[in-house]
Length: 184
Image (cartoon, rainbow, N blue to C red; front, top):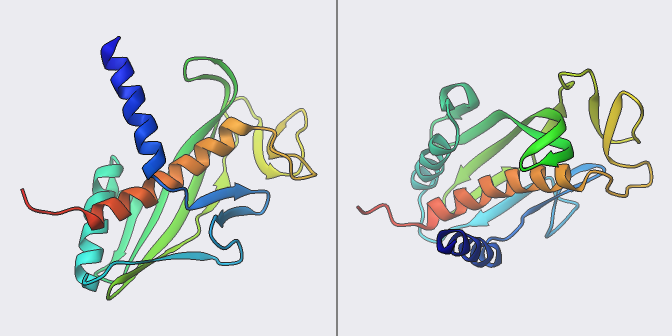
């Protein structure tokens, strides 16, 4: 009981310190700061391009089971992530869903002295095992689920939150990795 309470308190505390950079809209991912930009830029004082690249690459290698198949790199210049995740529809129980939809996402991170640029993620959905497909916005049907309806209102809140949390966790992890000390 105490352990569960401690984990819950730590989650709530971390939620206040972790900033959401991206939000999912009917048009795809958008920056919470400026929805007209197609990328995010972060500045890190006194950080070389090489250090920014290495810190980011170290973090990303801990995130993915097989980073060799997920990451494409140009040394000290660019890292491109192409990976998969999944979202559920029709929650039945603890982490159990009627339908599970896989989605592919891809985005690039570019490095310069004291700065990184993260392009907004591009994603596509795969058909579920029962033949249903998931679309971002167009309305649901008998063989299709939609995260947003035709008017732009959220219809699958859990899918929207999961996709936002996935992307924001990666971005926050990169920032934390760059800002942390590498001494051990």
